[in-house]
Image (cartoon, rainbow, N blue to C red; front, side, top):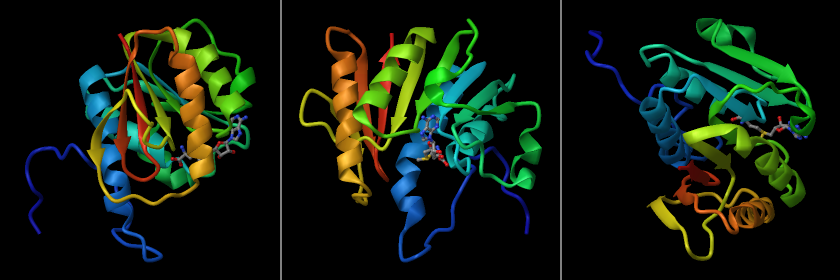
Length: 204
Ligand SMILES: C[S@@+](CC[C@H](N)C(=O)[O-])C[C@H]1O[C@@H](n2cnc3c(N)ncnc32)[C@H](O)[C@@H]1O
């Protein structure tokens, strides 16, 4: 079959349906937003807290590799990455996986373009991550948080599609940490509702 010309802006995918769940539908809104942000910012450095099997790492890398000068992602997990080596082969030179507690990472003075928070989903932990790393995000950069839910008020929900309530108590803790962090700050905050939701803090 002939390949379609032109680059798709949404490259990475899961099976359309698995275990009775329409994964693409659930995830696509937030993955699309994550990749849009990469296309807009053309980041030199993404710091990701919470690697696991690397779904989000690859979402970012797929978009980053389409940028004129693909940047680098540092991804951190207390248990190290759980991906298969072959899955990461095509991104060689553009990612570094670090096995560390996200709160005790030896991180130098480099500026972060995109910070992605998806590690331990407790109020205390997320708030500490925000306090530690948002100050290293450059002006114009973004902080993305996975597994947020729709906040009660004051926030624009830009997309709403059917979603799974995966673990609402965790989402509430993350929301609480974000609310606490955003107090007395002028950052804009948006939520994309898909599977578990994506919070976006605009570091303007
Ligand atoms: C929800 S998963 C991350 C999913 C990943 N972003 C993806 O898309 O595949 C959360 C990960 O956070 C890690 N984690 C838990 N506590 C942590 C900590 N204190 N520091 C760093 N990573 C932690 C867990 O080992 C787990 O792999």
